[in-house]
Image (cartoon, rainbow, N blue to C red; front, side, top):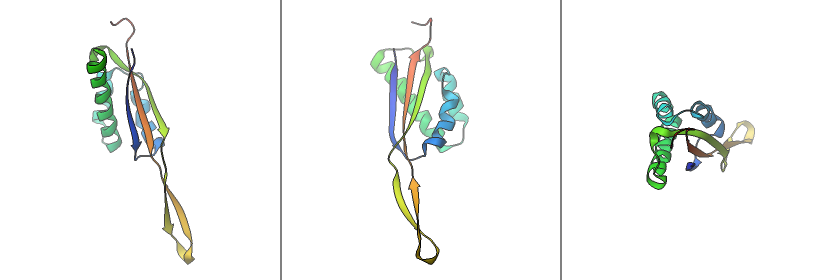
Length: 114
């Protein structure tokens, strides 16, 4: 049985989040939490909270044991982009794109576990 947790409008570009999301994909939940806890990036702290939320969803909504769960998929999609203007020399203006993303963590039960 699959369980999800979603984070929308996360103010970090998707490329930077995918770097850390790929490290926990396919790992057991306890190992994934340990990997994210050891990283010093603020992005990992947010992913750690999201993973704990997914585990809580699995426990409370689906009555699943956290010891049998693993991270089956982590999806990082493009979110809305804020467009800003930066003044440059000789009256010109450059566009600055502040990108955001949507993160979805999917947990599933390991094969052979009930």
